[in-house]
Length: 290
Length: 275
Image (tube, rainbow over all chains, first blue to last red; front, top):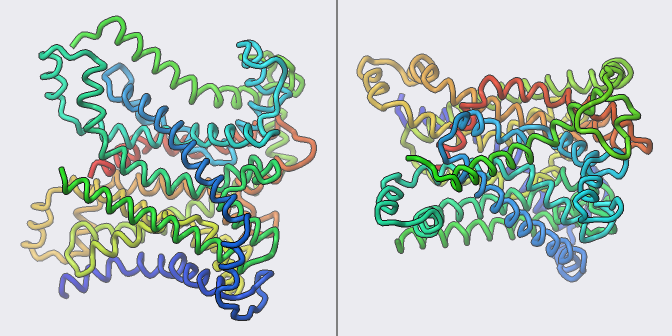
């Protein structure tokens, strides 16, 4: 048998599977977006671009997009800061470093629903640890409802999601850090560079490619987060945390407007793929320039 | 090299903060699950449990549907894991060890799976599964879980395959061994850590999956842990003791699995990210 034929035999099960479970539904979503299907299973008429003009002309989509951008940026800032500090620490030598590198990812391997229970409980006003701690530290005077106001709900969600994801990001950064040759630090030390100087002149610039890749991957991963938001606030209070994935879910399974949901899906996918395409092109261009 | 006092202080101080940030919430939940109800909802919470009871675990195992959810989750996660490995292994071998036209383009295309929200495919998939009678069936969940674990699994196999010298394969080819034999007899033992990493990733993603399980499964008897649990949270009167016991019980399987092969998973994650 020829090698090429065999290679195709090896990849085709996985490819056909992905085509059936992910590819085909994506095509269906596009078709659905040109129809007027309401409840799942009902028949729809071809309506052309009516859904698109309704959604792009309405406010709901744009508001959810704005929340998604806040969500992604908030997560990026908090996670990058926490992950970079963690990665720098895990890149040192100390007793137990191997164990630390393995178990740091604990928050990421437990089910989302467990993360949700943990934080619902810790933040609750009866028995939760966070309120008493904050009162003791003098930051607040009486117990607060973390999901009660629009701003605090979004902030709290971003912090909880970052808590879940920063160890994963940290390990990715650690991979970039271990690639920086140790001789560079040695040479800098001989030249008399201090800790901060070494970080600024060596670590930070050489970590840029890793940070860029993480920026792209992290943006896509955060953007698509659904379960943490849904299980903690269901998009509330009064829609303050309704990001695009939550809006799609609400439209399809609460509002029974399937075609509208499919339209928002298609628009979201175009946005994300456009972002991924432009980001990868920018990265390749930068690599070529180096 | 020797650390200065300041460097040691920032290293161990930072380490302590990370351990507290990650560990404390788990400590509170696990210790909370053995506290008496009145201690759980105490106004000023206790750091170390002052009471001890197994009543929450008893209730969880005897009076709630948790055992059913647990078995369902186990079944779905086990099948998802097996199929992910079965599909990812030959595909990764072809992608990273063989030449064929369109290889790079195909590899990039499958990674696009993570570029759109899962809910996007959920809507059409619901219709598809309804047509073939897979609504309310664990098979539907296995299919979805495998599809979402597969691209990442193939990506992760790359670094493990890279550790095997090509000479070993070439020697086998010279000896006249067919490629399937090379893969099964020679490569598989060498990349066992990679297979373990893919398996644990597939298991964890299936164990955690909420969105699809919440829509594609209708009857209570077929729910998996995430959805079954979410139902308990939503109830008006929250039984924290029960939830904390359930959370503790839901952590155990993944932590046990991770204790066995977590080391390899992390190395697969970090080595793969470099290339």
